[in-house]
Length: 317
Length: 213
Image: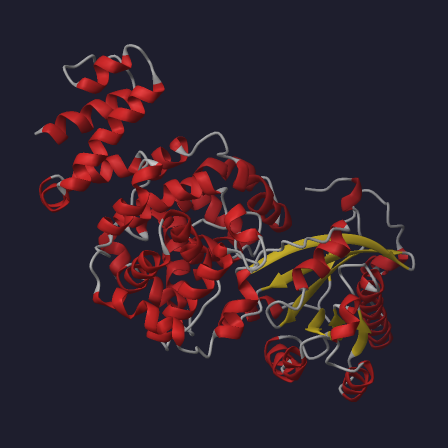
């Protein structure tokens, strides 16, 4: 019951402050002190983490909603692991052994290490700790999944995990994401799943944004020209990290559906401009304008993406 | 759609292909923006840039598609070969392996592109000459034997980048012109307006013409 009150009150803080309920958050909001809010959200997330098994079973919906508002930075590592059930995986004990082995993908992986988050402090220096652990996790994974081995794009996901947690834990979370979040299918050598995602996304455009769909068709503007990287890196190569990390929070809790949702919300919000542009103009718009449209914060985008009607049944067909 | 700089006679679609890490993205940014980025990011899928240059009297817009080099991405990237009139097959002169697979890239290209596509073999990273693994003569001979244009470049210090793109665009342009001449010989009713190069480039309301060889 505590959680319920808290999640409600947190909502009232993030949204309007009209409701001055009886909860502790709204009382502190009167002083509109940000650090208090932070503190309260820490208390709340602390409880969630401590009572995870119970909370997950009984308050699934509330947790989802809280995640959509963003997981506090200090809780990300633990919450992401809880969300994908990556704790106490037996494979974790193999990790150090895997690092002693040689992978056929090492050369390929090496080539991309310096080209993954090249501007991020943790990864930018040659032979830095960041580059080393990124290489380690990619290599370890390529050894436990010989079919996928290494695929470009996945290093951005692992890199994000490594910004939050130690390498063994990042490795476990990545294994989970590959197995349970459709990522393995996306990165398989045939990449057939990516083709399927493109097709499904196209169907959504046709249904929800028919005018834009016709425009794309008339300009021979294919979905894969702009959306491949959305799916392969969960927007990590599209938006600046603060924005992309918030989307990734939701990905951890709800899966690939969020990519479809955010993708369609983006098209919706940009529809008027896109309709005025030819193929080249649209490509430029996707490469240059859209990445910085939400620099002031992703809340508007995330809200819009939850207004998108997503038909899970239809997608399964 | 359409501004002063958008007045052109031809649009040539050119693809950049070759192994991962040979410098395709930096070749493109050097040519289209005169930029080189030491911290270049892995290309996921395809990226795209354009630049308009003068070839003879004609204004030619190069529409250049930069593709991911990793093998499994070819299923996606090969879709972009369609309609391309030019291709730069890039390798890294300091990594022999990236040259060894040029054959496979060519096969991939000819499987999906028009047979008349103009292809240039590009040995990139001449600024790292002390680490060279592919002798220039060897690559040049390979190019000659396979009917490819050839150049060595450095996207880092700009050597030959401009020349590489200019050469291939000129070659495409002449090929188009020749083809036009041939078709106008065999077809006497061809209209003057079908020959964009004969019209002044700055003429207003000219519709760009996309050329497939």
